[in-house]
Image 1 (spheres, rainbow, N blue to C red):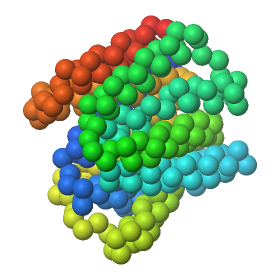
Image 2: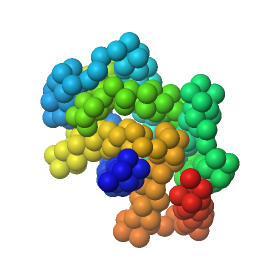
Image 3: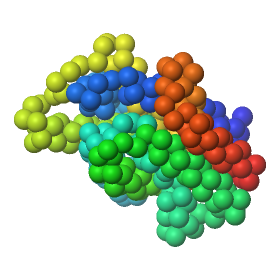
Image 4: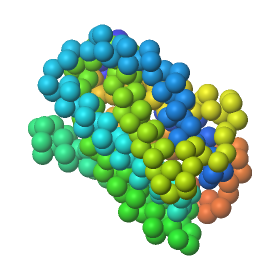
Length: 287
């Protein structure tokens, strides 16, 4: 199996985990703050083993050290603004906007790293982003305007850590070391969310706790899914990998309408899903 085939397989596994994670977030009450619990569970269960692999297996160079700092900082910023966005608007609005980063990733990659993408790939990424915006619009409600700048800031943070993570892959020889690289950023993010919670609500942990199965699934998926994304970047440009992972939003959207009977604004939601599917098809063909 060559690097490109491995990349597609990793993207498929990541999409399945992202779907599980996305649907779990939709089912939780706002006071649960599943992001906090998921990061804590990841750091507790996978963190020690993964960070040990990072320390012992990585090729420690100044480039890797810089990538680690940039990724940890941008990851922390991502989770802080995403958590604040969820306080103003539902996941169905915030998450698609936060996932609209592929065009930014392609732009930064071309400007700073000389990554050249074909014209059809740029067009495909634009179509995917248009579908995400259409999907987010179906969840608009009063007060949601405050969430849009925060969700866009999350997309910007995603574009930063995606390229930083891709640069780090050449120094991380194993999947375990990749997971350790992510775990450092997640530990920083969990600490920042804890301090944010203390500052805004005067408490050190969320007021509600998810059920144990939800907690376990969230903790195992949140890091492993993104480690698979970074692994896929070994064989494909970062913008294409992140673009392909939006297949998870398509699957989650179909499941939410068919299984969970979320039928509000279903014609527009279905149109948004269809546009994303067109973009994904163009991306697969265009590359």
